[in-house]
Image (spheres, one colour):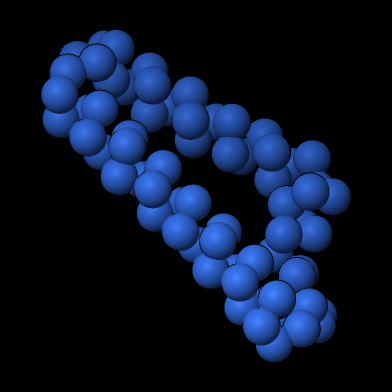
Length: 67
């Protein structure tokens, strides 16, 4: 992994953490109704979503090592 790939992976991790924290804080402030908690529940309940996330992560890491 070179410096550019490390920076891109780090920035995407920070953005993902901010989106997750934003969803949780919005749910805490306004109540966890169907719209706020649905994406989190779908990610936890659907095994296909985990397969897609794992495939994206493998593609990023694989691309970094190929270069």
